[in-house]
Length: 169
Image (cartoon, rainbow, N blue to C red; front, side, top):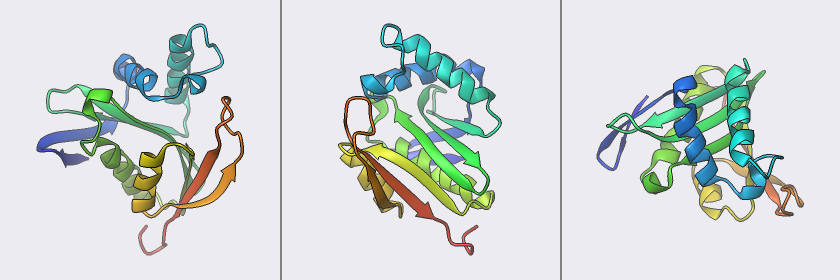
């Protein structure tokens, strides 16, 4: 998929082993320290292992966003399970934020959902992540549950869902 992001051409494509390092750097810069894995002494190794495991899963999809110079600016990770998609991660490099890249990645997920006859997209997000919640709500997601103390640091998780109309698929 090609998208226009503040005048730059953005390319979204499946991630390969070659993008592990760039994706890992974005991952480590984007997520709460308590979300980086069980191995707090070496979160980098834990997250790299996790990304490699996701690449190997037949139901996992990881897409990266490349800027015009070919650099990885963001990624999205989701699972395709039966007729549902489960959005696990969306992250954008700190220097590339607020340019529509996260939105372009979620839009790519929605195109995938519709072309693969998914009936719903599910996700959970930290209750404090107001920017992400606003983005998802603008895209039609609704909040349907709050998981109290869902995260290891005690923060609540907000569950959201987008039901796809059969006419849209």
